[in-house]
Image (cartoon, rainbow, N blue to C red):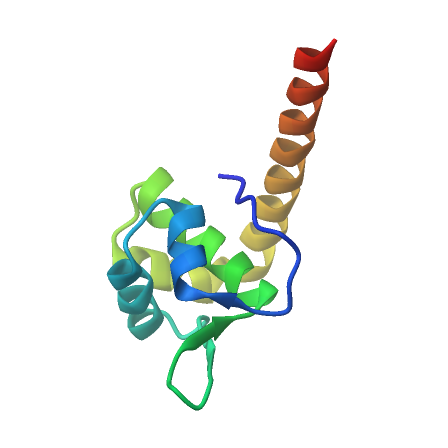
Length: 109
């Protein structure tokens, strides 16, 4: 899944949930379940997700929603094989982004 978010330092939970096509409650739930998600909170308590958080969310989304992992299975996978799997996932994500750009260019021809 390629997430289309503008490059920013921080993202609000609403825009993150919209980009992933999920409810904000799921993002908050995943934050509690996965140690890799540590969004900063401002004085009002609003979550501010960094690009690194977005990358981790993409990976969690991929494992749970696209590959059908249970939450426990995804946690184990993240801990045991995070580096190798994350590298593969990043390569696939970049390739999907390039593919989407090429499709847009083709449609403009």
